[in-house]
Length: 346
Image (tube, rainbow, N blue to C red):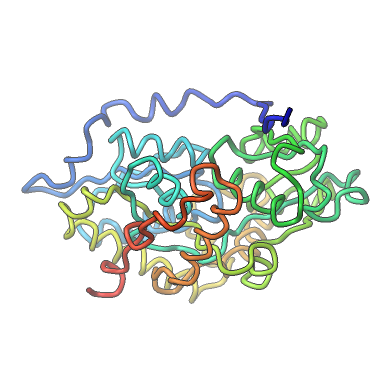
């Protein structure tokens, strides 16, 4: 009898989501109301993660207001939960990974990336320092407990993809819901996980303290191509297709604001970017936060345009392991999962 894929939980998801969504129900029609300043609610899959830096930075730079928009940023640490909020109609957009648009299409949902922030994941697979001699690559995943933010998240997708590409079956290791930030660090500290998939600033904190070692680095184009066989467009603003069609002027303004931020990131140093962010994002170690931004900032595009070959590779990667996509790649309308209309002046 085949073993079932194992997935366990070491931390409970907080209840803050329920509080932050008060009054958001049926907001899919909100931004299209005539008169006044359009209001757009955007859920970010972990607003303090450097991979999603453009969301808060755009607000800090005043670009939303400059476009005449009232943008309300909410945060949910898991991309899987963020997509659920969008599908439910509680928010108009999600800042999360592009791969969710493909996965959701297999479930009959039309969601598309309207601004592509990054063409690589910005994620790292790291292992506890004490296990670094035993786990040197994804080929060593068998029998291990590996942290992900939550089931169905992009860290979950990527962890499974790395395993399959290196000859390890998904059912031969355990994916552990470890969250991000303090919960991920705690899980590593107490032995709840042997390693896992995470981003900066968590990765910077764990590596600079010597608690963990990076074995797969997808913060660079070279590292991503080596790990996944090509580009893997990740951080993006994705929205419901019908909402986008009905609210093109608002989407164009959102895209304009985000593209200005992407240019700012590409034209400024990590120190200059960090200085624009809320002080609490740096926590008790501003220098570490600058390092985290510096280690990750090259993932961001300059123009918000989706690389077509990257989108195709995401489909290939998901098709290698995902029960939703595997064997159904030919049925996916990839063109419906993203648009360049709002970032290319079309």
